[in-house]
Length: 441
Image (cartoon, rainbow, N blue to C red):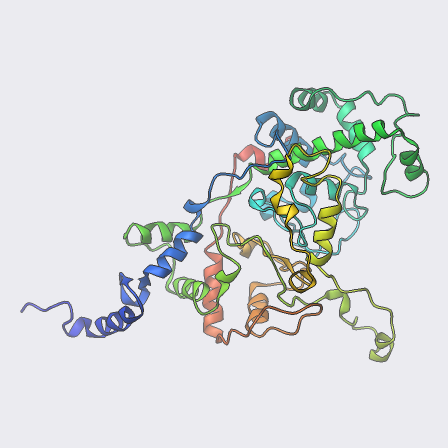
């Protein structure tokens, strides 16, 4: 006997489909039906929607192969540290998706913040959790001179480029000739604007044009590091396979039922796409999400009355301080060492600085490979994705500024489904294998 599609075997599903159609057009199995609005959101998140790399106005060499070769070597070179033991790859470990697995970064000492990943960083107009630099090349310079990270100085790094024949050859082919630094009276080996004592006195005693020569080499070092990092973009994940099949109206088993349910929550009731939108799952903006401040926690060994009267560090103000540092940096888009025209620097020129939107706000991270880059948040205070989701589900008050979060009211099963979906974003970096390994091996 012939049965219509809505005969006994299908009546329940047909009723669900009819109800769903009241809210909008749906497609495929009603249990996992997708409205046109949902499909549009999924297409925005799909890796196939990732545009070409944006230009780097301040770095005319950003897409040159030789600059990337130089940057690749510099990234893995431990000589770029005060003790010869720390490289960029010490904290940005390729096998950990260029994170380090620690709550807070550790180079020469421990930093105040979690190490962010750098894959896809070329798409972001602001770098660091607080956005205190406006380009990859200017960002790369900061850890090199930070005491807790590399702990060195620009004069020392310039000498490494001059003295190493491989570096000197590649640098000359990309940026032109290096300055003659052989006169140590003119170019003291460790002169630095951020040092104390003799090293700072030496820097201040240098002629202005000599200081600028060192600064130019230092800036170019950062531009080479940017050229390398621009080669690191995220690869395709199971989520992307699923979306491509969906957009082509093809069946797919790339995601499990729980992962699909989590995806629906992600783009729907959980409102994750408010901030985590786009093929990198970030809007590259800054938001206050009430992340706990670890410096404000009472150590277990201290009696409460003692902690009450102790001097405590100021809370991390995030973007409020970061945007001011970006505007003041000598290596920003508008600075002397940038290759940009003022008209290229709109992000910097029109950056919001007001108290209301910046205090306690931190950069929205990409969620690609998020399951592999624990711990989480700018302070590294959450060890697992489950802890992060619990925080968003029942957010506390912000330690500074005003939180933008509202309770989600998700139950335990829904939280587990949301976490399951996040695992579907795992992939490898889309880069040649040799760029993911040290050239010194």
